[in-house]
Length: 275
Image: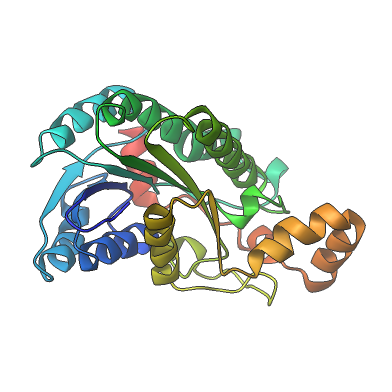
């Protein structure tokens, strides 16, 4: 699908990967509907889109609230001629020993990263079936292919995103709706601040993920790893030699950074969910 003059709806658009995706699509000639918890959060993103001369509409929505999501979509569908591309990007990334955290943290992780994504997609599909062409992009993670210590609930949620994306792609194969799943390595955002990484899990800038998302839409790619080498590390090697993959992971401590960091859900996200 050509993205020029299309409109894309992106969740979690205020910062990090979401903001980078917004900017990437705007540079490619698309208009953007940016969704986040508050309109104030997406103001900087709006300015970045309008700079290259594209149109931006910000919408405030808690994606874990199905009623709020339905209302948000009604407004999004009335923006210009509607939207053709959905990027499910919003998510949370708490970490630490599974037994040491209140389960409410893990519950919110799954509800935000997986359940909310599925609900939004379910509500969008009837609308997309009426469009000439449409595309859905789900931001997963290498943790969705190879679960590791410190990220038990996050890995579970992203494995769910991977399975959902694969099954939905098959289910929609006779329609004009494409489905792509993106597998980033550790991304340089506030969610990963203070977390150590190794050569097996390289730290990448958000713009690389954004470029992968645009490529996935333009070429209707089912899966994209960022960087490409991650496919070998988290998919091919564990499939061919699970024992060697575990040994290598233990040797390098590739995931121990998340275990030690004990990352919290950002305060602004936690407060909004409690309100």
